[in-house]
Image (cartoon, rainbow, N blue to C red; front, side, top):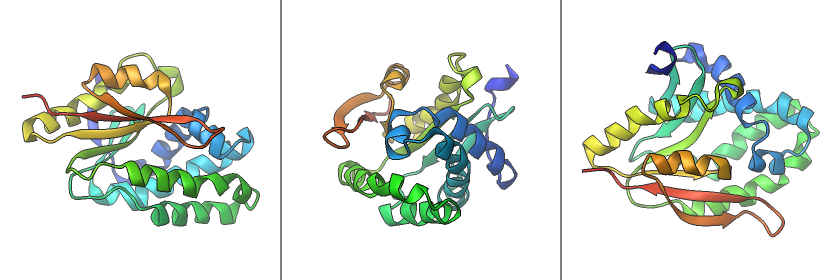
Length: 203
């Protein structure tokens, strides 16, 4: 079906994909923990995701979407290290300058990013940094459609894949595609968890 055709995103798609990811992630447990106020999330996330796509993922030519822009997936190939904590915070600071009240909310972000960095695998792999689907279209198989082409590439090249799921509801989706939980990571004593997942290539 047309809505499941996956293609690479271009610079002309950035604004729409950033808005899509903001809607998809607005109620994500980790996002809500880092930026607790709903109105602040609605204002900040589109700008932050646009900066991430434009500066961190499009240069690696690994941003994917559907024909109708119903989903977005941000990948990094082997040899492209996951964005450093300093890079992510630098992008966040650009958004914070526009919305000074966000500053206090983002105090949790540096520790979280350092923790994720410390647990990121060193073995070469494809890294799925973010996958989001338009909320009204979730549960219709679009997430699986977004995963399939890249995972087929992993299998063809014999290279593992890695992701961090910030929502337990999504773990089953990734498990259906061969990912296995390697660690449940508590972000803070009273904070949410993330599930680190690894997928070995199929023969």
